[in-house]
Image (cartoon, rainbow, N blue to C red; front, side, top):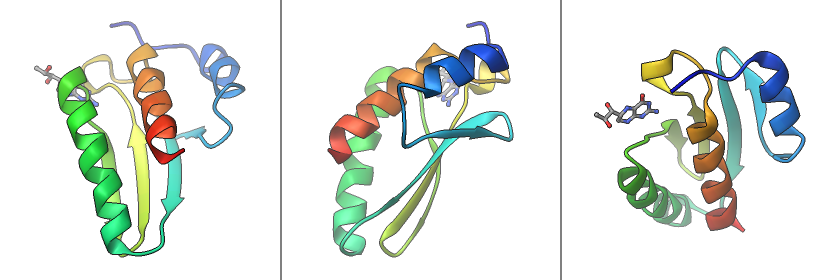
Length: 93
Ligand SMILES: C[C@H](O)[C@H](O)[C@H]1CNC2=NC(N)=NC(=O)C2=N1
């Protein structure tokens, strides 16, 4: 899959207010009530990611989750990353 250009990424980000682009990936940081709520969302994201065969890079510290999406195979951000970002936004609500 072809990586999107920086211009294309910035256009698409207009539709994803919780996400920003840096270091060759789109990023979001989420905060939950506690670890259990955070891990529950991580589990739901994991099932969607597995379904898509497209997996987030993420870091969880207690109730916080930092997610970076990029497409390793394409060495950049692709449509797949935006598709997963939308799914994550839908799960978080
Ligand atoms: C074979 C398998 O589909 C690939 O290795 C997938 C797995 N998950 C992936 N996830 C991400 N984020 N980027 C990839 O290029 C990627 N490739």
